[in-house]
Image (cartoon, rainbow, N blue to C red; front, side, top):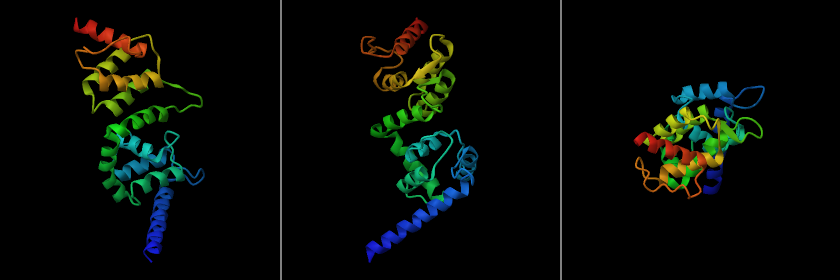
Length: 207
């Protein structure tokens, strides 16, 4: 009997998750589009540029920026055990904790870059967008490093775009390198060139 009740509860939960999806979905495309996401964020009382919206997209494994499919929505909300906006609001602090665990964060960090690849076959992201993304994803954990990295990226002229290898290098730099003295930075340790240049720039600033 318990099995039957559990199955019934799960199908009721899925029904509510679907109802919530269709309350935001565009009728003709059957997707939650940027307009639907804005309305969803408003109900959630979270700004659409808040990192927690990116965390939700990661939990759903959403493929296209600004859009959620029904399957993605189901995947995320079932994992969060949230079938109403109220439950979703309550789930956000735990999602935030989950993402910030070292074992999970690297996956989220990689996802954040991939999620911003909006064109087919796009492999890199422009400097301006990278600066915003760095601040959004790493700013609260590595404030000083991100501030200087962003300052460097905005003033240098060698790079117009950033690729995944460089993006991953930024995170490795933040977690491994003593800052601001940079005493354990070894340019022979297979760092992307952009980080060698950044370290040279930092050292020149420090005189």
